[in-house]
Image (cartoon, rainbow, N blue to C red; front, side, top):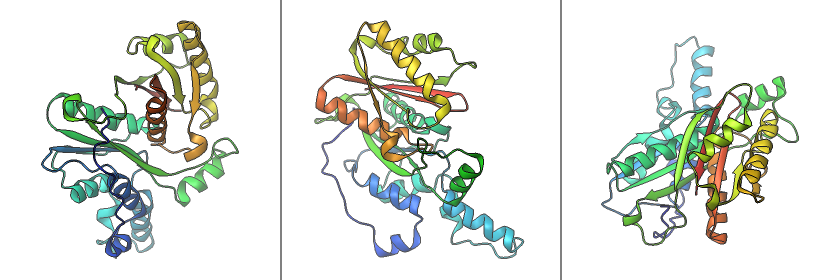
Length: 290
């Protein structure tokens, strides 16, 4: 369950935090403070990220290279490690449970969601803050331009999204319920029939009315998404609504976190089931039923 019982805390960062913390950590903290856990709960944090602390890490590495490792930057190094944002959230919210920063390309968010749900299922936490974050800097911009990744359709982006999940017994005002999550890899060449079988094996499609996909991101995945969603519609004998989200947030590793947020809001408004379907250019895939 996704809990909304707590009043969102939109307290700004302190001047010291704004001065010392990297942009990715600041984005993550502000997102986390909008869904603070109840005090005295055992809290886990799982924050998926495709590239992690890219900006701060590049500053540290550039300095090492330029000065032949003679003058390291110890004050910048803690913010350059991959799990810096997740760790800072745990410190800020006094969370003592699992602290994880999974990296799995475009399914980094779903990996974090899966970890959070496992924590709840195993009674290792009372609630979990799960989400995704990535930041944009000169390196993905430059590499994407050089290799032709970016176009009018595929635009680079960044952002942070976190949600608090709890068990049914521990919430009174849920936004929605996550009923299934599955991670895997698809075959190459892409086989739409196998994909539909993989999805229907984990999800009751009769209760799904809409699919949220990564369409509008990587061009190579467009036909895969369209074929599978059309096939699922034929399989259930009715047209499934197809929604996209990357036109609002751009393309980055943890972008599906924004798809999850959009799907939750759609479910809240329509009181019908939705499926988040994500593919990676390198072969990863995931589904999340809400």
